[in-house]
Length: 126
Image (spheres, helix red, strand yellow):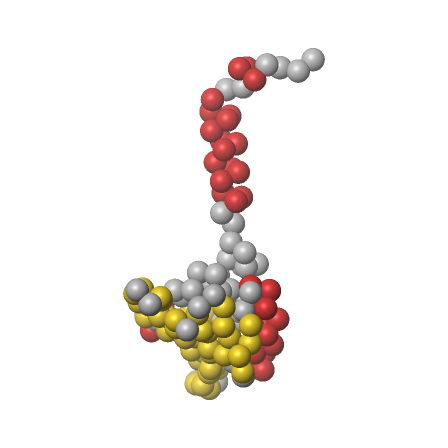
């Protein structure tokens, strides 16, 4: 015998609704980290954001973001991670480490520093 819907307590319904909303809002990347200012670009797990160095602008022509991340990782590994990740997110390679999607161009490069790597991500309107 099933219980009528009116027997369910409002607090139980509210808790269920909150749980569903939290599940829907779960980030797409495995650890929930994204490149600063580019909310749909996962940050490679071996990298850490450098928020103080990142800049973002929104304008009529589109958004401009320059973000930095650092870590003890080789550029080949960074390139392999984004070569595998970006096409799944709808990005098409232009050349080298330059990608395009929906009127935006993404590029990244890196410099070796203090035994690690500093990666610069740049997103500009195309």
